[in-house]
Length: 172
Image (cartoon, rainbow, N blue to C red):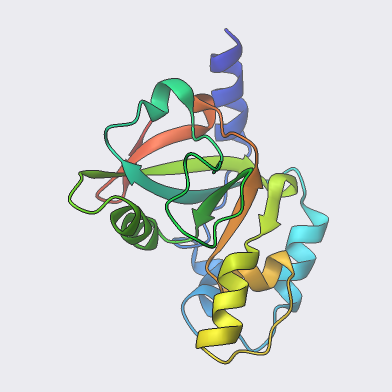
């Protein structure tokens, strides 16, 4: 019963998908000139649900266990910080991260629907943008979403907040 209620609430909250919502294309599909609108939206809507993406090996029982945070034993990148699940604005980018972490494995992309208040800046991606793309940016969530094209979540993402993303559609 609880899972039904949570799914209903998520549906009614009109979750935002930054990658597909035309309202945000000026930020996510071009070089953003200003993040003022995005910063204000993130600050004023902490309970709004957003959809972000994570790619991983199909071998893992994600829809049973959820997405577990990186740990010392589950680290596929030298720069990943323990305790977080990293998410991408774009499903294709999530797929590529999964493929880098698990070469020669079948990759599944999951759509995670979470509230803005749970999102944190992905400091690893921001550091990469500064080092390799020469961008002079800070460590805010808005910069993480707009320039690093992702965010991170502390702790696990429960299966109720996940769906399998396939060819532009998501199956819960």
